[in-house]
Image 1 (cartoon, rainbow, N blue to C red):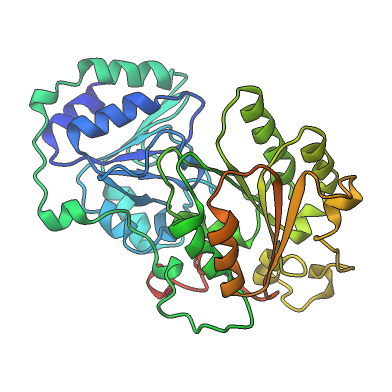
Image 2 (cartoon, rainbow, N blue to C red):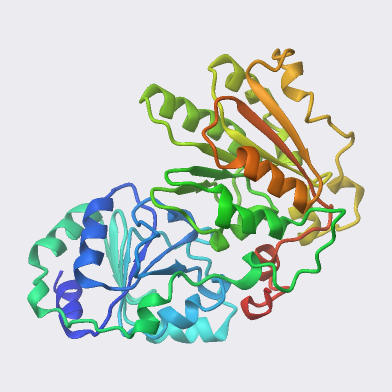
Length: 383
């Protein structure tokens, strides 16, 4: 405990890096950040769990060398990092050990890790096992003397500088082609227009999963995505669970699902449960004719990454029993103008029916986030 409390009194601006954990301290963490004005960061697996990403001192999503442009440069300026809810794994921490700059930073940076049942002072250094992270955090708040914390004075430029994103969610460098839709355009519109306060966004382990760090979350928003090596097809039944839980508790949050057409074939029968229980998510079906994430990794032109048949997503829910479309609407979007039309007419409004929004994408349309993760682009190149 003395490591945590003493360090915070002597450092100028220790940022909070929030990871997922089984203990929840959302209100306590936000109160801490509002009182101290410390910079704060999420990790890919903790989006919306403990941090309100609309806070002025929220700086972005940290994932080591895979971080969006500017995020690593921002966090390494701090003399101490408080990492709460720590999960040191490839999904959340995104540490490969192959980047020399990251290796040097982790070896020399003062980082206090606090997980569900462990604490660690320094990366892979002093490890304390079999403790309650919840109790340690509560005790940390009890002994924290705000009068001893150095006052943080930020310039107007620093105060106005919000979350750091890769430029991949902007469209400045994209050659606009009117006859097709790009994954980057979908990412941009999710950030700028589609996502509303309190929305819950689920994403399949698809090529799009690696673009999530560049999507802005509104107040109260959350992102749910499984780990890299979990079975594909997770997101469709997970969306059933989220929608059913919200309905059972009379909550009106909108639910959006980013679902790949290939992985959807693993758990397609779950579509019938949306109809059975009158659940109304917005399903953004990424139709890229197969397994684009696998194409990016290996076998770009191999037939095993292609679907064996072209499924008609416009008729799929009719096949599951809603033949008169009493409970769902369908949309087929093949270019950016059609996407913007859907957004202006339907995409930001409450959902009184299930929306099956089929997005026609090129089979080799790899988002910048995936290319950065695979080492085929750097964050600086992700424009």
